Amino acid sequence: MNYLITPPSTHYDGGIGITGCNFRHAAETLKEHGSSLDGVLPLCYLHRHAVELFLKSITFILHKKYGIEFGGDFSIDKPGIKVVNKWVSLENTHNLSGLYYYFCEIYESCKDLLPSTTCWDMPGDIKVKINLVNGTDPKSTFFRYPKAGSSQQDYKKSRIQKTNIDGAFGNSGKPRKLVLMLDANDNIVETYDLDADALSEVQKALDYLSDFFYGVHAAFRAELTNGY
Image 1 (tube, one colour):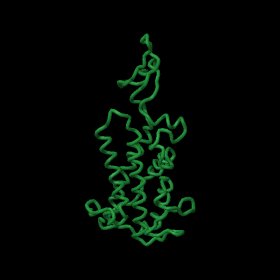
Image 2 (cartoon, one colour):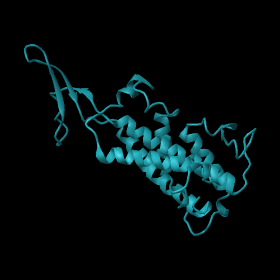
Image 3 (cartoon, one colour):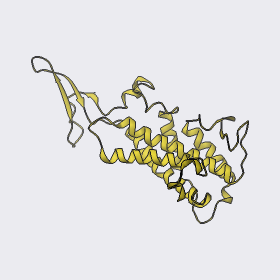
Image 4 (tube, one colour):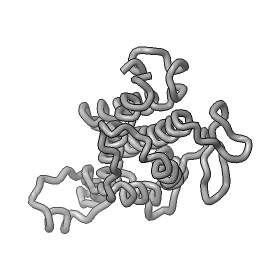
């Protein structure tokens, strides 16, 4: 794979895909080594951005490989994407559902042209997972800031959450990590769970999508760009 050992500016997609690989590798490193800090947001952001870049890369590759013209004033030198029948800059588009739907549109139009040496079928659950993530973070801001959605959604971003010590162990057989805040008379005034459920379904979807599109991107590079 020449794109792994050559400058991004020389790549078939201008370096979009290798940048996605770098964000995914950063996420995997963070997940592997862990942290005593609450790392939900950076981990989710790294995986989400990797998925976004992989989708942009494989979409661009199809346009370039099969001479698919862009609409509006967009071109190979200035690529765009059609979102709800409107052409917008690929660079400034962050909505995962929009990116995936457009990819599927052009993917289906040239699927018969793809090499038969690879199975190109897209699993049906990809769309469901894309929409789950996009419903949480449609603008690529939710995982970057502590307040970027509704107060109810923002509250779910952290593994450190307020709880009640009386019910902290009621429905779980696993050990719990709690912080107890005491007043001057050693009475418990507040209790915090240090390992609460924080967007677990979204995290699972992001982990799956990042891994899946990492493989899809690699297949596109090997089969359609001769490794560049």
